Amino acid sequence: MPLLVFANITARPGAEVDLKNALRELIFDVRKEPACQLYELYESAEHPERFIMHELWDDEAGLQAHSQMPHMAAFGIKAKDWLAKPAELTKVTV
Image (cartoon, rainbow, N blue to C red; front, side):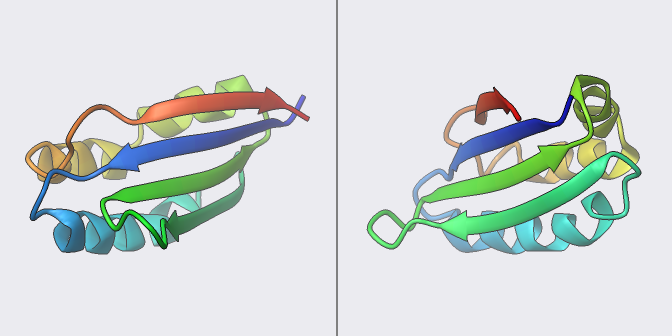
């Protein structure tokens, strides 16, 4: 069953541009993942430190595989100093 995910991501003060650039770079690799149907980044117009990643996966297994990808590990290392808190995920079955 397809799984829709909204990942709410918050940057630390002063890290907004670095985080946004890294998220944009990440999109290219994630979209190549076999289970990825959609992966779009949005930035809040009112709160520049807030981002939403809109994702659609084939299923929960595809999302779990995504979290284990090398590009996700590399992103985690780069972004650890830019994130105010862990991403908050909202999952919706479609």
